[in-house]
Each structure stands twice: as structure tokens, then as C-alpha cells.
Amino acid sequence: MTKIIDGRAIAERIREDIQRETADFASKHGHPPGLGVVLAGGDPASAQYVRMKRRACEAAGIHSVAHVFSADCTHDDVLNAVHALNDDPQIHGILVQLPLFDQIDEEAILEAVRLDKDVDGFHPVNIGTLGMKGREPLFTPATPTGCMVLLQEIGAEISGANAVVVGRSNIVGLPVALMLLKANATVTVAHSRTKDLPAVLQNADIVIAAAGIPNYIQGEWLKAGATVIDVGTNRIDDPDSERGYRFVGDVDLESARGIVGAITRVPGGVGPMTITMLLQNTIKAAWRIAAQETEE
Ligand code: GUN
Image (cartoon, rainbow, N blue to C red):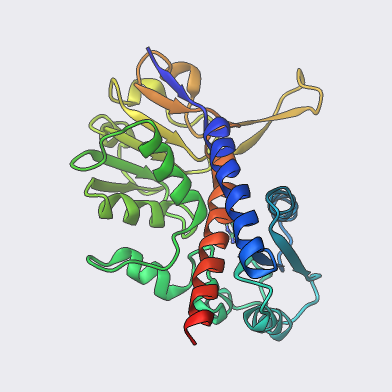
């Protein structure tokens, strides 16, 4: 029997805790936690993600502000927005939606985010400490954290497991590989140049699929009883659906059913967890900054 992991239900439960914590913070400090969002990229999906993130903030009682730039903005415009959010006492977390327009130096922008407001976990110091033994970042990136929480929620044994991450992006593949390593898994990172992916996957107790290729990974490539977290959110044409398209993951769910032990669905798996982890990081940032201010 293959268990379908219901990310939506798990995220919903965590969001109830977040709402309570937000109210608790607001009653103690007289203002809610705040998230500042910077959107300076032309990917239509980014605009949709930012809308969803702000809507989730509102539902949770978190204050949010957005700096939205058009394609003719300069690097300094975006840098100034980050500096303004760094200095804003109502803002505890900053998210710079990626990818950025070509004229903007992503590395410099991410480095400019105040470390204790880096709720996306992409500041080079946070990514660096994530990769180091015996050190802890202040924040870990949202989607990889969502994957780890799903694994914990279903009671997957991570320590000592063979984990294969398919994809090496800065946003998902690389940080989730570092998090699995920290949790004592034996980690393999497969990518577009990997030879014979089915052979690599045959021995994987845990698979994180983050390649961005619709229905790519076939059930017969996977180990019997494996736990599979499918991060892929790929839009494919579907003349039978009302909208004319639907979303599928990187794993062919139908062929994996009956082989793997547990798998997330798409949509309704990792997606709802990503925003939830961002909200959680924002509250964490708010408590930490408030505690520091009390000490000063
Ligand atoms: N672009 C796609 N996913 C993400 C994310 O989780 N954070 C940011 N900042 N940009 C993204």
C-alpha cells in the first residue's frame, strides 16, 4: 500500500499554530510580525507566488509590505528597497523573490539582506552555515524545510538512509541535500549530467524530486517502499480540464503507486508547506529581534 502524503492537511495544522503565535506576539509587542517582499523579476509565476505569500500573511495576521519593480528598474533601486526593509522596525523578515531581472546582481542583493531578517535563508552566511558541521543557520529555506518537515511528519527514518536529491538548484536541490546530510542521511545529488538515473534511484530510501520535468521519474526506477517527496510543480496542457492545463510533479504518480511506501501528491504536497515554512520563519525572526531589543 502506498501512502499519499497530504501536505495540505499538515500545512493547515501548522498554520493554526502560526495564527495563535502571531496573536500572542501582537498582544505582547503591540504590533504583528511583519514580512517585506521584493519582487523584481519578470517570471509570471513569481508574481503569483508573491500574491499567495501576501494572502497567507494576511490570513495568519502577519503584516506584509511589497516593493514591486518593473523591468526598467536598476540594481540600486532594488538594493535601496532591501535597505529600507532592513531598517523598518515593523518588518522582521525579508523575502527577495527569485529569479531577478538580469540587470540585478542577485548575489549582492541576497548578501544585503539583514542576516536576522533573512527568512528565506538565502543569505550566503545562512547557506554556508547550513552546509557546515556543528554550525546552525539562523533560517533554512522554505521549500527544503517543508520537505524535511513532511519526512518527519510521516515518521521517515532519515539518519542512515540513502537519500537521492534529483536537481541541484540553489532554491531547492542544493539546500535540501545539505539538510539531509545534517540529518545524517547518505546523500547523492543527481542532476542533468548524471548517468543512468534509474540505477542511482534503485538504492534510494528517500527521494527528493526537484528537477522540474513533468512526470519524469518512473515508478519502476524507484526502490520498493521508498519515501518520495515530489517538489515538481509542472504545468502541462490538459484539454479535459476547465482551465486547459493542470499541474503535475516530477514523479509519474500512477506508476509509482503500489511500489513506493509513501509519496506526496502534486498539487497538495510540498506546495502548501513552502508558504507555511516562510510564515514560521517570519514569526521566529520577530521573536528573536524583539528579544534582542529588550536586551539592549
Ligand atoms: N523562487 C522560487 N521559489 C522561491 C522561494 O522559495 N523563495 C524565493 N525567494 N524565490 C523563489
